[in-house]
Length: 311
Image 1 (cartoon, helix red, strand yellow):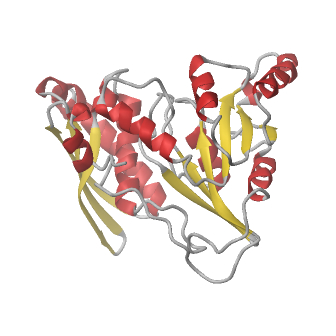
Image 2: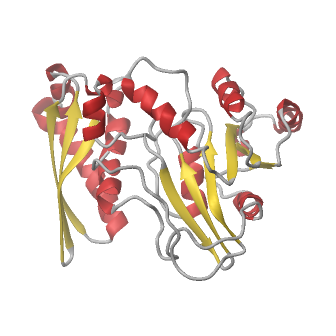
């Protein structure tokens, strides 16, 4: 996480009324593929992706524009059992808050899998009045395709979905069908964002997230969940962007794990993040990273606010 931004306030922008304009929340259990789906629909990386659950920590919007429509796609943290830490409780509040005043919901499940966490998400959707579309992701990875149709029939017996779309985000299969199902259920109205705007998040936030993505990919199973990233400096000049960021950990004992022997691990994280930044910006990036301790920040509400985790 890069900056202590408040959650965005959405206001109408631009000119005349569109045939379809509104908010669509992507919801599901942790690590089910919501961010991958958002990026595939947008055709560009808007939300970071790793194989680890709870990679997404914020509501992140992707603004999908068509000639007659604007669909604002809301990527949410995965809903999970209420955790013991203040951070986990905040992630659940962010996910559930995305269901308020929403126009369409896309409930994302994976292949022929069904877990207790999927069931909990389904239960949270019981009181939602907006249309709910079931998106069955990663169907290309189902080993026995004969299992898919019976599983879809079983899923539709759990509740009456407004549409069911099997798809593969990584292969781009059936994405247009899902987009159409969403768009046609959005109300008429003015665009919520200017047509040239792709996301609600500023550049500093997105660059900080690229660092956090590399932390998730390069650290062990537990440590990534006690790290956060805060941008200290962002300077842009002709052909060069300079970024300085702090990696926060919860204890002194965690610092050497992040830094690695001779600083090699932090150098590797920084190098990979820098390359991602240069790909995003199309120009050279100079990145400085260092590690600091904020004791037990995941259980400190004031620290969470300072690091940008807000209701």
